[in-house]
Amino acid sequence: MLEDLRARGERLSEELGRESYLAGAGLKAETDFAGIFARYADLAGEEAWEAARGHHALFEWAVDNRVGRAVAALDDRLHAWEAGAEVVLPTGERLPYQRVAIAIANEPRRERRLMLDHARRRALGEPAAIRRERLARERELVAPLCGGDYVAARASLSGIDLDALVEACDALLAATGDLYRDTLKARLRAELDLAPGDAERADGAYLFRGAAYDDVFGAGELEPTARRQLAELGLDAEASGRIRYDTGERERKRPRAFCAPVRVPDEVYLVIRPHGGYVDYRAFWHELGHALHFANAERDLAFEHRWLGDNSVTEAYAMLFEHVLLVSEWLTRYTILRGDRLRAFLRAQLFAYLAIVRRYAAKLCYEVELHRAPSLEAGASRYAEILTTGTGFRYASEDALLDLDDGFYAARYLRAWQLEATLRSHLTERFDVDWFRNPRAGPAVLDLLARGQKDDAATLAREVLGRPLGFAPLVAACEAALA
Image (cartoon, rainbow, N blue to C red):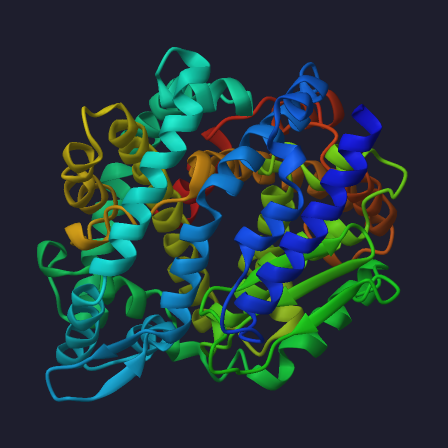
């Protein structure tokens, strides 16, 4: 039964991955996740659960598969809404919902930026209702695994001590608070003529867009630069045809870049909808790390070690490649940045890095509180306060049930930042600060990627890299750059 479970699970994952790619890339207006799950109804049954017991990654997947089947129709409704929804401005102008986030990040006029965001929020009633129903259904299925405590159940399934991670996030937010607030105050005053208490989330999207450096990060040079860097490192950008790039504009394509593993390691898609400038480079290199990881996983690994496991690991590889864009040696080799402008760029982007880590730390604190509240409505009432305090930008209550990642995925991101710092130190010590273009580093990187997700983040850090997970290296790096 175990081998049959693995074989059927891989076929299901392939169908779900292909559907996600087609919908996310704007190649399909509607999804049929419900139909796909219906064809694999046996994988949500008791026999599948019993076969998966004792195999940690498989059992977590079996639980998520049962949840996925139960909420598939809701996911189809949400995808259909996102693909077809429009946002209507007070002027009567209409924009596709999928374009609004890009428009906000690119809009230098604050009045219009806020108008776009307020119009976006007015449109969120239907998706928020779908999301509320989905969350309630998921909690009904998962919470009983640990006596009705959804947080404890997810901690048990993932192997991540969520309460301990929340404590670490609180410590991170406290340790970086003064440095972050001082830097934010200076940036807002200099670039947007705003005080921190007046800045909204939409202002943050524009501030971190980095439009002043669009001349440095041209759209036409994005893929060629990535291919050049990988060639110098000794890696094949296409992994012998296993990685396919989807980087063009398409009307229904989602604004958030993603990597879609369809057959691991043989068919992996990197998808990005261009925003313009540095944010495209950052998103592309992030998804490139994912794509290289999935496409170079050892094909003899079991299904769960190629597809499943602790996604903190694949997120760490994504962040490892994204982070090279914050290394002065990378910037001087592959861009025109030099001198004071280079230093100003690095300072701005390291601040953006700290901002996103603090946002996810606040997000995890909120999500744990949300799922321990007496009701979703009671928990959601804390969203705006917690995220506003953590980021310094005003957040709106309309996003409280939409700005969530399933199954506390925020915890995977946070552990990935911890693991990425460890990976970067490991490679820098062995191959110098420009490891990213050192051909001697290529085989070492491929060896790590080939492990797939056989190890969780803590095991990989401890047993392979010889270091513990923690936020200390990240805090030290930010202090050195911004103090």
